[in-house]
Length: 201
Image (cartoon, rainbow, N blue to C red):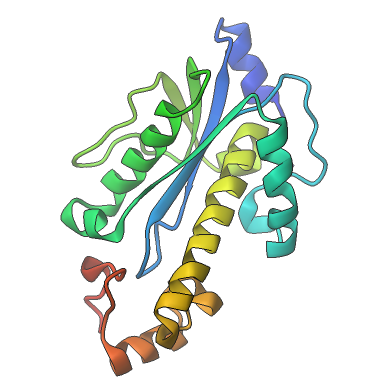
């Protein structure tokens, strides 16, 4: 389970406001990539908080308002599929994470970034930071950000399912499942598909 040790270590180095940052939706064939940044109070305990991938959809939805209500600051940002195609997914992920951190009020003076990358071909993380591999399983702040990013993206994909019902987005959230590929072959891509991800069609 994630804990506060990474946040504590950063504060001991003199950083007062430490945020966790994570993204959701790097792999799907369709839709935006989302990112969230969260600064949690030092002594806050949120029961059940974990890496969003380890939680059920119901549990993520239950944690979503709790994190937003109890965080010192939180923000969610995204980059559209069109821009993912124009740049690359790594750049889009970095841009989304930096946009989320830029929108925090108050701003973080140190960031814990999930993963091992902090720059793409076009964009890089500019907030002072460290990259944490499997950070969403280690840091409560990154875990909280992972939940906000994942729930925000899933809700967006449900809206897209209503706009483009033929693809079954409500079932696979844009990921490359057998059903999604079947519908793509049947109907072709829609405006939210990432054209650069569809080379196997």
